[in-house]
Amino acid sequence: MSAQSTKPEPRDFTIRSIKAVVAHERTEAADTLLGMALTFVAGAINAGGFLAVGQYTSHMSGILSAMADHTALGLFALAGLGLAAFLPFIAGAAFSAMLINWGRRHHLGSRYAMPLMLEAWLLLGFGLLGWFAHPSPAFVTLAVPLLCFIMGLQNATVTKISGARMRTTHVTGIVTDIGIELGKLLYWNRNPDNPDRVLADRPKLRLLALLLASFFIGGVIGAIGFSQAGFLFALPFALLLLLLAGPPLAEDASSLARQLRKH
Image (cartoon, rainbow, N blue to C red; front, side):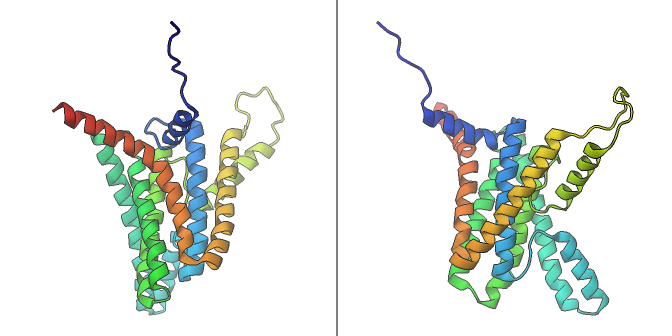
């Protein structure tokens, strides 16, 4: 009698691959895929959000500089609007750290998936709220802090996941690191046998180029999508985040349910 085949179904590989992208045990491939997905989302939301609410929501350097200018000119109301964008970004980053550390304390495999799931629901809320309420001034007042909170949440999550190797909501650091690695790549080592010769980190340069391209492509698609389809164009990005965060959370929920049945 032949033994029953235990070969995994293709669907098992798909779920396992998706789950590995946000798993607490990290690999270089998982970091690259997650970084590309999230820079794509950030580029789309940042560019599309500008068309929707008239302000970039991940550019904290620009927001803080504008606050300083407005304060110096005595335009305190405008400085206050900048503060209403700056503080939610910090709050989003802080909340991400709280969720991840809580998940680590409770030994959850979904510790990194939790903030991404929250980001997905907030994006979903942004899209539906914009669809119903735009162009109400009250919506813009709410939308800017909401998007800044989302960007802070996402950026802190990726920072924690990658050990501060990646940022996804802005590209200043990415472009700077690309320039550094290109400088190393083009540096002429007169003595190739010198153990202290300058060498570029080619895998890092490749990763940075992929992140930069993902942000740009996401920005183009986001700008076109939000201008043509309106706020509901946020929904596909929310679904992408749900797809990434769902499997680890489902596995933890299933494990918790089994433990409860035993007791």
